[in-house]
Every structure is written in structure tokens, then in C-alpha cells.
Length: 292
Image (cartoon, rainbow, N blue to C red; front, side, top):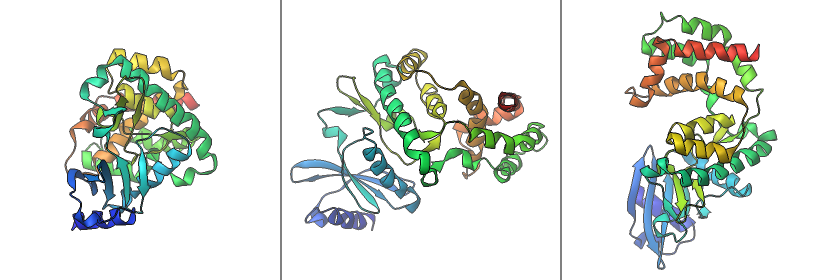
């Protein structure tokens, strides 16, 4: 059934005899499907969104193109799909590989993409903030109570302090300079030019509004120390209050997302440890002190 729907999408995109094309599945996860196919001698990738929530990526592609932010080349859109170039056939780019996270040249090539995203994004969102996903919006008293309950940490004193100050903190955080943030850095989500002079991120489902350091932390947590230094050298300065905020809020966001899942994920275990060992409380107190 999904193949038939994708063929109908290709027809909407203007491809003739789409029902006769051979579609090879690349991935199928969370209602987002990727297929590779040949058409008139050229290889393409179609991204089909069975899950309506993730169709937001279509609009995100359009916004990035409007802002002249480099993306994988797109050939067309419907309300459920995007037709993209096949990077495996690209003469300019290749897909990222795990060892790129240790590569200083790749780190330097990635930084300008983030610089431009953050610079242009800050201008764009001035009167358009309601259009975007904002990660920090999940940090509510209701969700904090849910984390307390599901993690069985109700007796940890950190929660009382957080709930007492959360409204003050959220208000102050939203007063910092926001921009468009990528929010999903990892090597599987970027492409690198064959000469390593340029790199860019793709997959824009989690594009949203946030602080620049949200992205910087995301990148640095995956890169090696040397590659991280190279990234920062090219990226330049940032407001260090954002780092103070991020060190607390990233733990909360991680736990909130983790307890939305049926099985607690490994990537959130350090955040849960932070509740028990005092790290979360210490980080949150620094946020409150930074704005008083």
C-alpha cells in the first residue's frame, strides 16, 4: 500500500508512468519513508511522510531555500513528499561517515553552515516565531511532574527547586536572542564535499527555534575534542549565558522526551543520573543565579 501511495506522489510531482518505476527502500522509520529509483537515466530519492506530523520538513526545506541556506538539491514537493537528489550519485558530495566526527577538516567545513543558519534564522523569525517547533516548550510543570512520577524520583529535592523557579527561568530564557536551530546533529545527517571544503546538514524534521548554543552543544557532544575546537574556531563567539541555560534545560528536555517512549532509551541515562547525583540541581541553580 505504501508503494502505491508513493507512486501516486511521484505522479503528482510530474513523473510519467510512475507506477512502472522500481522503488528501492532506503529506510522506513516513524512513518517517514525513503526510496531510491531511476527515472530517465538519473537516480533520485523520494521522501514520503506517512506520519502527518513530520510533513513539517517540507515547509522547512522551502524556508531554508528562501534563506539561501545550502540543502540537498530538491526537485519538487507535494503535501506529503519531497523529491531529492541521490547523494550516492553526486559528483560534489558524499554522505557523512562515523570517522568524520574526528576529522578537523570536516568540522571546519560544517561550521559555516551553522553560522549562516543562525544568522539568517535570527532575522527570519522576528515575526514568524509561531511557525516553528520550539524544543523548550516541552518544559512544563505537567511534564516535569510526569518525569518525577515515571522515574520514581519524587523524593529528590531538585524537583521542588525547579518547580518553584521554572516560570521565572522560562521567561528569562525566551528573552535571550533566539534563532532557527537544527537540533539533530550526527554524522548520518550531514554530507561533505569530496574535497572536504564544504559540508551541510540534511533531514530538517527537528528544525525549530532555540538558542545558538543548543546547536553548538549538539555538535560538540559528538565531535572529538580536536574537531570540536576546530568547529568553534570557525563558528566564533556566542553568548555564554546560553551555555549555562543549556546545561540545565538539555537534561530536562532529554528526560521529558525519554519518558514519552515505551522503553527508556540509553541516551537518556546520563540525564537520569543527573537527577540523583546533584548535577541537575547545580545546573538549574546556576541558571537562576545568572538571571537574578
